[in-house]
Length: 188
Image (cartoon, rainbow, N blue to C red; front, side):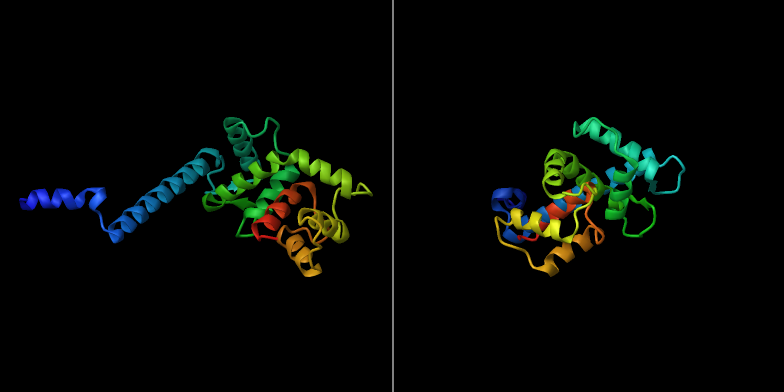
């Protein structure tokens, strides 16, 4: 084979070394992540009406409403309480806004929440016996026990989940989806 033919043969994916395949996959992942970051930065630019570089509650509410309709996730507008929860759950800066790096998590949490809204309502009907609008420690423990097919969680696990969703005083409907996801994500 000529030098050019050898170069073409070795450049073909079937003849790529495992190291080259790993490098190509890593490169593709980097490009995918860069495109995604650009997408979220563009979303901030589009919905950031006050040009602050981040999204406040009102701007996030518009984004969530339009994005949800586009993705056919939900047809109702998120409430101020739901938006406040999304900001609390996703904002690393602990201010009342989110930036481009936090939008993906906010959208994922919203999708999880609206996808499981009927289940959340059923859980509250079953466990929130006093109709307080929050599940207290004992109610959460009973709920997590049900999720674990009867295996009672430790008190420290229940407190950890409640703390993680910022529900130390009780878990609200909007926090319950996140608490449930956390419980399953940690393999409990």
